[in-house]
Every structure is written in C-alpha cells, then in structure tokens.
Image (cartoon, rainbow, N blue to C red; front, side, top):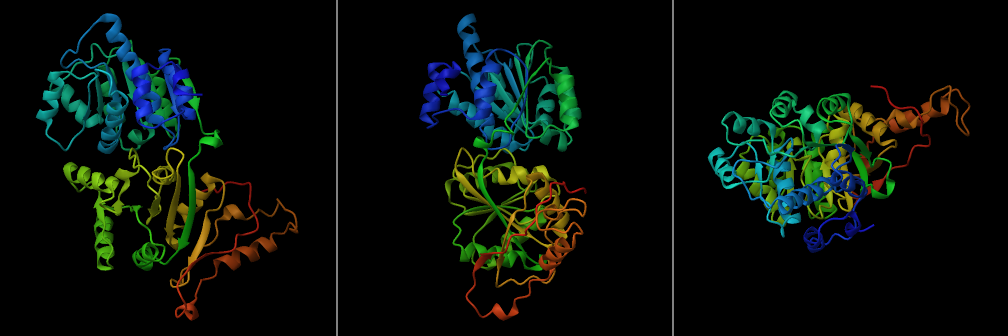
Length: 448
C-alpha cells in the first residue's frame, strides 16, 4: 500500500514525498481512511508507529476540502480543529508535523502551551489559526479570557490520552469538551487502553471505530534491550564507563527526579563527559534550546526526567538509557520508544540495582520475556539482583527435564541470585559480556 491509495490530495502527497516516506505504517493505513470517512475513532498505538501522521494527514485533507467547497477564508479566533496533548514538547512536535505535512496548503496552525508569553499566542489567534495544538491548562486560560471560539470547530483529537489522565488533566479536559460543539468528529489516540481512558472515550466519542496495531509484529520497533545489574552507588561511574568503553556517540538518559538529573550531569562532566538536562525546573525556552541542540548533535548526552518520555521525535536516536527504572511499566515502554523509530534500529540499556527488582519484574512480565543481562567485570555487584520470577515455573507446572518438585528451578534461582563478586578481575582489561540465560520461562504473569 502507498499513501496515494489512501486518497490523499496531491499537495499532501508531495509533502510526504519531500519527507522521504514511501508507504504508510499499520496505524496510518488503518486510521486515515476511517478519519476521512468522518467517523469517530479510538486508536491504540504504541509510540514510534507513525501515530501523529495518522490523524494529521486526514485532518489537513478535510480542512483543505472544506475551504475549497465553501470558498471560505480564515476567520480570526475561529478554530477548525483542536488537538489536546499532555506536554509542551509534544505540542511543539505535533505542530511541527502539521507544518511539514501541510507545507503546500494554506492552512495555519499553532502550538499553545504554558511557560511562554500568552499575549503573543493571543495575537496569533487574532491573525487566524485553523488548527490549535494545546495543553489543557493553557487552553483553559485562553478560553476564560475569551481569546478563541469553537463555534466553527469540526474536529477534536485527544492525543496520548492515557498520559493526560495520568497527569491529572481529566477535569480540565471535561471543562474544555463542555465548550465544544456537539456536532464534531472525535479522535482518541492512546498507547494503553485503561479503564480511565475508556471512561473518557465513552463520555466523548459516539459509536467509534476501534483500531489497534498491537498485534502487528511487522511494525514493532526494532529495539535491542539489555541491562546491567549494578549497586546503586556505582550507577554514575558505570554509566561513564559504558559511554567511554563502548564509544557511545549519543544517548537520551532517563532519570526519575530533576535533582538527580542535575547531579548526574555534574558527575558526568567531572569524568570528562559533556551533558545537559531537561526537567520541569527549567524554563520552556531553555528546554526548547537544549532539545534543538540534542537533535542537531551539538549535545551528545541528554539527561531527562519523564517530561521527555513522550512526544519527542528525534531522528536517528540510536540509544536510550534507563538510569532509573520507572515505577510504571507504560513509562518504560514510552521511554524506549524514543529510539528505533520509523523502522530504524535502536538500543535500550537499563542500569538495574537490587531496589529496582519489583519494577524489573513488572516490566519483564509486560514484555513477556526476560531482558538480556550483561555484566561489566570492573563493577562487581555486592547486592545481587535476582532473576525475575517470570523465568521460573511453579511446582505444579513441570517442564521438560523438571521433576515437578521445583528443585532444579530453585537451584537455578539461587545460582543467579549470588552476588557477582569479581575482585580478582579488576586488573584485567575491562569488557562487557553477556551472562548465561536462565533455562525456564513460565507462562504465568508476575503478580505484584
């Protein structure tokens, strides 16, 4: 299938061709025809699958068609389409995609978010904007100040709906929806379909077409995942060691707190590794500048808190590092989704200490397999990280070569739970090598 078969206009196809895209991804081929038909949709799609284009392309097509049919012109403060997103970074990214795909169309868009001058955004609305990509908080501020009107709005898009609910935007979203025309097309995109997301969909969307690409293995990102077990106090030293020994040229490094991000940047710089950080404590202008420098390659190593986990589209990002494992499994999925995008290969490396074992079990249970473990001989582990119980069969589920009493399974778990003390190797040349894989894989999920 090609983009031309999706009945997109020649001007949009020219823009797609300029970007170097030859054929649609699974979510695009499924969603675009439904959106063009005018139906509401609920779509479940993982990050890195081309989700943004699946609603931006038909949205541009519909607005352009209506302008041709009615011979209308832009009217200040009257918005045709509204796209709600959870973060500033995602707002900027989506609006950039609109500009790229609509470069040959006379359609105007803007990203609306907090942390920047609100008067400048008001002026943009006065000049006339067809599509607004907004975070809920700043949009409500604009609504209360009567800076924009929705009486001509035709389409609402809820992008990364699960993330917006996780961030506590449900009340803001409901207040916004109450002000929209009842007759509109609704599109909801979410990486996960929790009960909260389905509840939002039930209140917002009418007789939707449900689309999912989770089972489409051919379109899954090509990400090599591996981890190194390490004592918590050695994490920053190990990270520096990996960067130097494996000659990493670039990495997006995820950490849990903004204080930890600043500390890690300082530790890396003391070891001769230049790095920067983005987190909620930095102004929007600084965050945008740092992200721009990271995308261009001027910054090689970027330490980021959760604000960067979604919405960032960094071309050819070869590697992400989980310095801290996230407390939520979905966050792990979205973090590693920053690499291996658009069919490219990527690498996801995690530094795991013993106090991360609970999070590791949950992640491996979701993945359905054990993450490959490697060891660094210069960093012997004093507090060993056990192998996830996902790998060990229960007593009542014997496998080939197992007596059914679980004795061999226990011996295997004990073997891999021993501390990895390799003091005798400290004088040898440092290297990273893969540890042995455990023998058993249980069909039973981990219960936490």
